[in-house]
Length: 92
Image 1 (cartoon, rainbow, N blue to C red):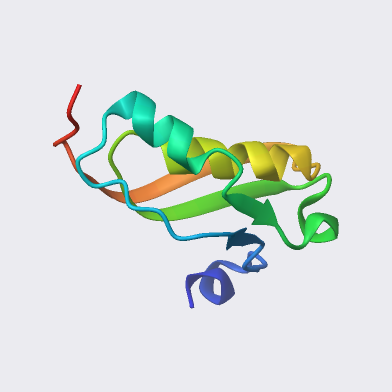
Image 2: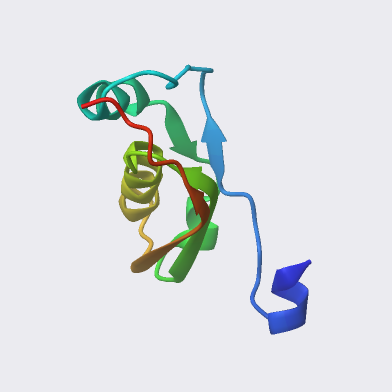
């Protein structure tokens, strides 16, 4: 695990509350469909900390934005988002 190599604690602190499909949706629809669909399950782990949010792919950034908001609401001090890939096919 990367976190062990770089000596940074790792924890799964976000839970997706329901499944939703984003494929083919516009940027605005993606933003609306993710609202309220994630929850921070370990607020005491993120409170007052710098958090790195890892995502496999981003298209519109809606999920990363919503997850960042949940981490901020749980008390994370700084949130950096790292994404492995980007899908450029977003309908306007």
